[in-house]
Length: 234
Image (cartoon, rainbow, N blue to C red; front, side, top):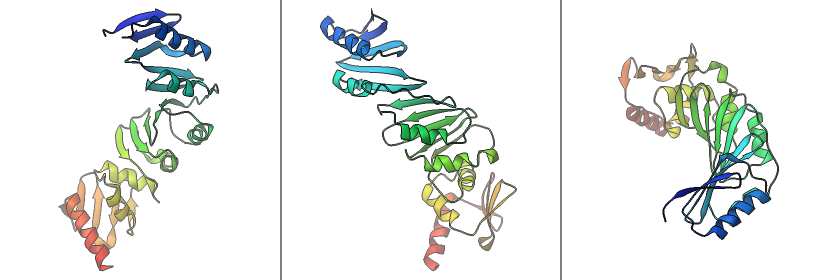
């Protein structure tokens, strides 16, 4: 069926449905729960609904749902307000628990996207990362935000470690592997001038220019091998 736009009640619906009764069911469902659609736009394609629903000042980003699945999300009429963030829940029901966790974060204004198994966050300064839904690593990261340079940086996946600032530095310097980061953070290291990581007993330094042992630059692969050999000797 060819897609077209229909203006029904207060909604602009992009649809391929030729059955007006089916569209009426959709409209009645939206009206039943007094749904405010973001920009009043709704998609109903191949019998599935996609809609962004405003709940307080958060958004439910619901996609590819049947009418019955959509109603399961709409039944909960509670609205949530969290002014410090722009929050979207993607096919996930908002809960007071995760809202409370977000409110405890010491982050600047950020976009927060909550999915079934993970959370993506991007701060107004361009720092972006992915965390588990418990947000434990994000909480620890938020406690060292005053040390982090306000420039765009994609940390990728983060995890809770004993030194979140060291994790940020290692990610900044190109060490992305969380297993390798764990190995480094288990060593006796120091952070010098908030900018370089030094492990004296290995004569190892990691900084913005690269990874160096005894002043000689090595690759991440070489570093991984050296750390593996060190663990075996221990």
